Amino acid sequence: MDYFFWQFNQKCKSTNIDVDWFFPNGANHGAYKSMTIKYDPSKSIEGLFLENLSQTDNHYTHIITHFLELCTPFFQQVKQVSKAKIIGVDHNPRPLEGYPVAKRLKKRIKGLIFSRYIDLFVGVSEYTINELLKDFGNHLKPKTKVIYNGINTLEIEARTTRSIVKPTFLVASHLRFSKGIQDLIQAVALLPGSIKKEIKIDIFGDGPYKMQLLSLVKELKLEHCFDFKGSSAQLKSLYCLYDYMLQPTYMECFSLSILESLAANVPVITTNVGGNEEAITNNDNGFIFEARNIPQLTNLLQDVYLGNKKITADTRKLIEDHFTIDKMVVNYLKLLS
Image (cartoon, rainbow, N blue to C red; front, side, top):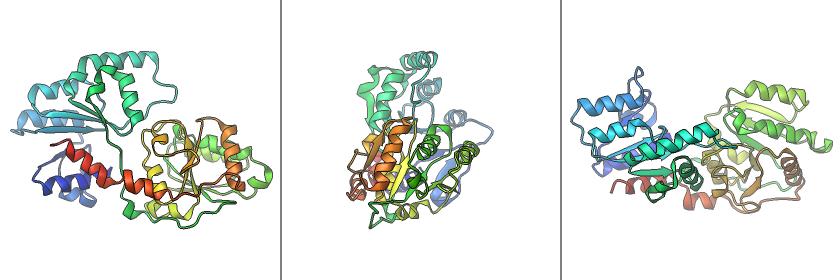
């Protein structure tokens, strides 16, 4: 979200709109240095913002929240001291099995009580809006809107060729259980021996589940198949070195790594969860399989590796036409008019 925040702030300044940013820390890299950032590590963002509203003469016209829990008492408290239009943005993926009954009931009650204090709910995908309505109630539908996340395509080099037989693969993901990389490892273990001897999958990213994944690779004797590369600041320039990206995730809202991979003209093999199918069309710019269906993933990997299944389309155009950061900024600016 860094680039979005920077560009949104710049566009606001160019149209004489002043923006105060409330963050959990004092970010100072990149264009954050030119932004008006307010933070106090000893306070929650909600607490700091409410304190700011009560102590200053700020007459905000719009208050936009990102990554804050929606339909909480915070929004009621804001409305009590501000006449601003409140816009809550939902970025959160939901569990594959859904929330437990008790949590669903709590969310529905919160929706009935506190949703009236939020003027507009923005979801980063159609999936997100649908889940938001499940959480808080269908009565919110008239005040919901989808604004897709976008990326800076200028930073991403496009691949010009794609191997039909014996393609190369990468994974770009935070290493946690919900990303399903353990399923990919088990799917590779089920491949015919001739493919297992040759297939190479590079995994970029780090996270709390890394040691379990490494142990599983060792247990299944697949060390020659997987190379854990760690996190890389150069990832955007590395996508184009591969033929396909793999993302066996269990939960996703609207994946930026999918957008980046497609912008690099690298098709994506991913699951039917979250907003994935709003960017990936099966057999067009990637392949879709059922989350947690390891045999299905094995068969798909085998077909792609042998060239029985292939993607020939240029996957970059979709991103340039619909999912750029410029479009994202324009759509958020429209909320201020």
